[in-house]
Structures are given as C-alpha cells and as structure tokens.
Length: 520
View 1 (tube, one colour):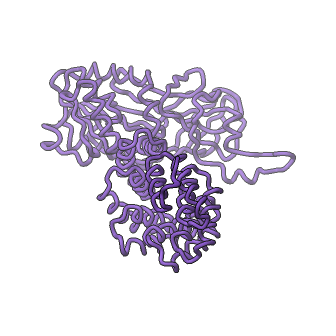
View 2 (tube, helix red, strand yellow):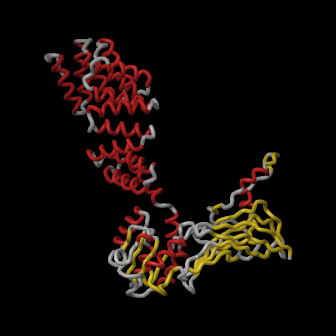
View 3 (cartoon, helix red, strand yellow):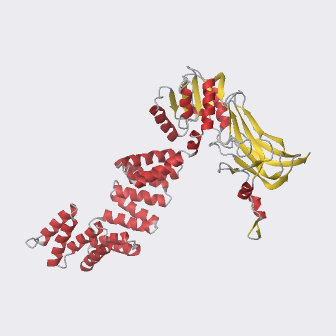
C-alpha cells in the first residue's frame, strides 16, 4: 500500500477506515507508515494499541499505549486507554493509577472513564467504590445502558438489591431484549425468592439469544429450581399411572365435572379427560401451570382440560368451576404423606368445590411402617469407633428422619408391614391431629435400626398403590422415596418381643419414635 503521497492525517484516516471494516492488516500498514515518517505520532500509537486489543494481543497493546503516554503525559485519553488495557491484563493496581490520573488530564469521554474506573474497582472487589463511580456516570447520563448495568451489578454485589432492581428495570425499559440485563434481573429475582419472575426473565433472555451459552445455562438453573425434579420420577412411575388409570376409568363418566388439585404437567387431568369428563385442574406454581397449559394444547385436549393458575383454596365455583365437581382428584402427597398441606387442601376443596356425596380419588390412605435391619442405614445415621477412636457421643445428633434416596436398600423386615396411621379422604369431616401408641410384634430376629415408613393409597375401594422398600412384600416404585426413622440406639430383637411406637401427626408432618419394648 502506497501512503507516501498522503499526509499523516490522511494516512491515519485511511487506516481507521480499514480498521472499522475489519481489515486489520491494511489498517496496521497505514499506522506503521505514519510512524515510519513520524516516530512521535501518538495518534498512530493509540490506533495501533486499539488494533492490538482487537487482536487480543494485550502485551503489544500496552506497549503502544505506554509509548503514547510517555510522549504525551498530559493527554487524558492516552492514560485512559492504558488503564483500560491494564484492566484487561488484570494489572488492577496499575490500571487504577492510570485511570485516576486520566481524570485530571481533561479526557474526552468522562462517562466512559467513570465506568472503566467502576469496572476496575469491581474487579478489585471494591463494590462500594464501583457503585459510587457508576452512580457518578448516571448523574450526567441517567439513561446510559452501560452505566445502568454497572450500577445494578455493583448494587447487587453490595447487597443493595432494591437499588439494583431499580437500575435493571430502567435499563430493561430501554432495551427489553438485552440478554445480559435479563440475566442480571433473573439472578436478582432468584435471590429474592421470586422464582416465577426469575424464570420469566431467564426465558426472555434465552429467547432473545438462544445460542448464548450463559443464557442457556441460566435458564436451565432456574427451570430446575422452579420445577422440582421429582416431577420426572412421578410421571415415569408406571405402577402409579396404571393404578390411577384404573381408578379414573372406574369412577368417571362422560359429562362429569372433575376438579384436580395439583396439575403438575397435566398427566392425570388428561387421563381423566379421556373418560369424557370435563376436567378443571389447578396449579399454584405459575411456571408449571403455564407449561401444563401448553402440554394440554399440544395433545389436543384444550377443549377438555382447563388449567387454572392458582392454588385450590383460591378456586371458586361460578368463576373457575361451572358448578361443584362430581369428582375430586388430589395427588399432592409427599413421601412423608402430609408435608404438602394435603389435609387442609383436601378439606377445603371438599367443603367448597365438591358436590355433597362427590367422589374423592384417592378415597383413603395409610402411613405404613415396619421394623428393619440394615447395616447401611445404621452407618448413615450413627457412628461408633473410627480408626480406634470412640465417636459414640456424636450419636446425640442422630437425625429423627432420613430420606432413603437410594431406591432399593436391602432391608430385612423384623415385623410385618403395618398401617401406622389411616386417613379417610371420602369423609366430609376434617381430620384432627393425633398421637397414638402402637405395638409392633417382632417376627424375625435381628439388629433393629429403626422404622422404615412408606405410603399406601387406596385410589378407590379396589385399587391400591404402595411403595414399600425392601423385604419380601416390597412393591417399590419410582416415585415417593420411603423414609427411615432411626432409633437413638440399634436394638437386638427376637420373635416374641413387642416394640411399642409413639406415632402421630400434626396435620402437616409425621412423628414416629420408640416408646418401649415388651417381652411376651
């Protein structure tokens, strides 16, 4: 390229045109030609530094920037550029010194300089100072997106979430599809516990930039928190599904109005609709409700199934239901049976939303239990001697209950499986809290670690579902992990003994503990 007939200004202009068009080699040739004729041309040095930054050669970039600063130490823009490059090289002390020096040298872009200082303080972990500089930038440029984003990020890091939300809301009003802003807003909503808003914001960010790895990662994190993973196990539980199918087919008929409490993905609602019934199903989790509505429509059942996006206690006859339901379906049981407000939800729905004499599926249920021997369960809940040291006093912290998250512990039953507590869901009466003492005869000798608890549902008078773990009578299925209630100390048991348990519930949770042992 022949630039010998050009003035330095013309050569720089031509180089800049190449630079902006991405023709870096041609741009570099122009800038070097300028330096060849004028080795003190600081503008050429600045542009070569910027070109090196674009090529990610930060060492070369810093070399050119330092040369420009040496020749023109009072030029604020050169100090600014040097500080930005030092920040990129993680020389934060040097960067801050250069950027602060630039403030006193009449830089051409004070907004950009303030924000670079904010960035440098943030990378140093000095978030209060980062926020001060971001706010300084906003004082003169209240709608600058970079300033709003910087202020929001610093405010979040300082724990000033209210301020951060204001900055993000203002920024998103200006740029509603900005993936980085949506990610920040999603993180803030997640931090505050508003998972629905976090989910919606993350989905917007992913929709705006589906190829952005960070947007995809964020939406997967929040989807996983908004919708618990046990939904997959539940829907893939073939035994459960078969039992509900039998009960629904037997108890529903065309023209019935059916209310389901707890939509999930909509499986039971659509199974019920196959009978010709008109199904209304409510879901308190907005993310799940929205997804279920889409699944219902995708399966061409939107005219048979209505998804109501509210908890059952907010559902109203005449507004959400055309009339009181003929059948109430509720599969809202936890592995411990009661911990998802089963009883209050069912009782309220039966009083207000089910016609007198209406059917309830399931009609009854029991909390089942058995005495068990299993060394692994003992090791998970107690300790004795380790490496010759006695740790038995640590057993004061043995838990009251443990989720048996490994599906098939090889437990040996030392008693027959027994209904510890029974519940009649068909009755119109409320179920009061209760505590009883229950005797379990020992049927097999062994070292008893405690009681394993599972659930049994009677979907109607003829259709049971049970998830007993281990033992000869086990019917273990994929859903509802059984629980283990360890005794304070394991006990050697033999047939003829009777283990007395104290069993009860407070309508929200279950209590199972050893009360004593009787010899026959």
